[in-house]
Image (cartoon, rainbow, N blue to C red; front, side):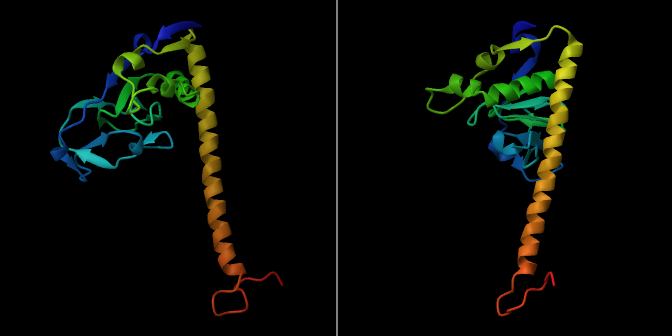
Length: 188
């Protein structure tokens, strides 16, 4: 493993917001990612569009929030326009998981501490020191391992959501409704 600056290992592009007058709710325009509000469960979720192309990211790129909350990570399955609240990083799954760990460890928050508005700049992102295996196969294996864990977590979250809905439905059926003394569903 070697210590490297993130900017020496990956291409990092800081966002640039389009003019506010170009924002729209038209899915035929470019998807605009402005910050953490546009990321859900580690993925870009289209919410706002723009007709103006400023800085961009391609499908498969990593997205990092560079303004409060600093360090939140995601990926994009779409070609997008990036606003000033995010940076795009062209990196593999290993890099993504490394940056997720940095966020969990509070690395970016410590860097942003002391500023009035929590943010990190281009030099801080590009200058972040990361430990990287020199063997690309080892990087792939580590990245795939954590990607598989992420998939398992997602599956369990979906099961949990379904169980919560089932419980809510059964609570409605197994207790009498207003104006009734007998529940809709009984065990005897």
